[in-house]
Image 1 (cartoon, rainbow, N blue to C red):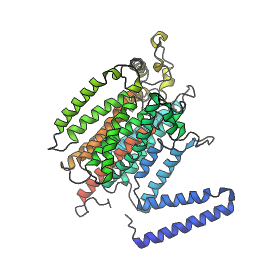
Image 2: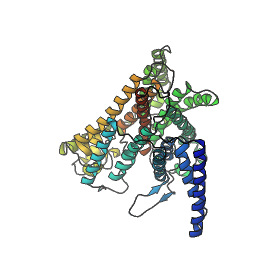
Image 3: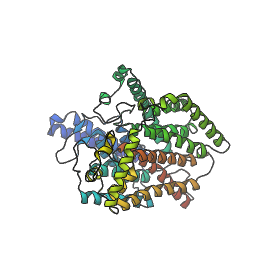
Image 4: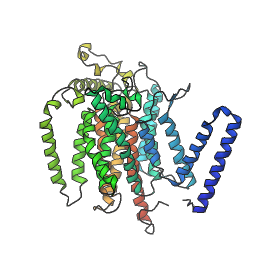
Amino acid sequence: MLTLGQQKLDSLTLTVLAAVSAGAAVASVAAPALLPWSFLALAAAALVLYWSLRWEITLWAWIWILSYGLLDWPEWKLVIPGFFNMTVPRWLLLVTVAAFALHFLLRGKRLRFDRAVLWAMLALTAYCAISAARAGWLQDVPARVRGAPYFRLLGPLLFPYILFFLVYNAVEDEKHVRRALIFLSLYAWYALYIAYLQYAAVMGASAARSLIWPAYINSGDFGHHFDRARGAFPASNAQANVLLLTLFGNLFLIRRIRGPYRAALIVQAILIPPAIFFTGLRSAYLAFVLCGVIWCIWGVSKGRLGKTKLAMAALAVVLGLAMFRANLSQTRRSTGGVAQTGPILARGILAARTWEMVKRHPITGAGFGHFMEADRKIPRDPATLAGFPQATTNATPSNLFLVMVAETGIVGLALMVLVFLSIFHLSCRLYGKLPSTDEGEPGRHFVVLFWIALTIYLTDATFVDPLWDVPSNGLFWAFAGLMAGNYRLLESQAASPKAAPGGPDR
């Protein structure tokens, strides 16, 4: 790996500054109308270059993911005929890939494609691409219907997998974990601010929306779940997933950092559960309970009475259910009601239609991204659909694995399951190699935190089709990249006894 000494760094910095100045001067002379954007663009390029050399490169992954919850402004969209519409998050994806590329190139790091999960990802992506190309890159459905095959392949599948690969290869020490979780917690303050204001507005304090920024979040035309606290995302799912991972990430950090921000993390951990409740997602409630059980059993060190804490938490949940029974037993989702049966019955109808689709194309499926188009060809009884708008031909069965088996057949489903089994197996191997104490970083609690991230994702995927939700997929796979990268570090340190503990992989 190329090591940059102080003198070399100064020379490189001067060279970059000179190149930036010369480039800005040439652009200003050639096209005066570009001022001052030419200087800003070149300065940004210099910043990315310097960042790729000296700063925390993996933070770019989190910047891209969270930009969907802060910078996905509808009016900031560049329409390019014959190409993708470029939004701020899509521009940031290009910058992220460029920053990682410069990091690997200038530091002389070797890219590794040496894990079973990477081969499984490659096989699944290639198979889905062939399936989509065979059936067509566009669906023959109304334009308003979400989920074109090319978008499903690129946004929620290929890009997060690329992110996993880059983060996996970029991890140099265990401190990446702490930095990522702190960065996530910083964003969570904004997410909580929006969530509490949205909930106040939903409950009748409409003036609260005047305090929400950006203003497009207040539009009912932006995304879904306008009647819930969805944060700055177009639906509540991404908001709930971010808050759930942040909550348990805070519990991880509270043990490992000192100072004023530790107190801030404790306050944030108290504020997050109500905000999860505000999302109105039953899947989020279930994930919260499941992750709490996992944390209490495996995330609490020996001697800290993990099972006792689990029992106390269960008692608190029971008491909470008793206290808020009136809210939970009604159908208004914004106040926590879980008795809304329409979506549940609609899912049953959609699952039955999925089975009919699977029987028609059991091996290769109807084509990746073509569920709704294939669903329109299946006869249905209109009386069965009466009263269930969620079960129209513009909907999927709201389950990742049902959608995959319908669109890509048994082959695609098997590859998808293989991806998750491979990453879980890798985490179990890492858990077995780490000491059972709290000493050092990242420790077994980090692997438990990854299991929580996996539980959050799979619970969400049980109730929705996540292959339209780019930030949730990016969130999980970036965190999985941290886990896999730490496993690689542990292997390299074991193979090189002279390497300094926690040092970079050379």
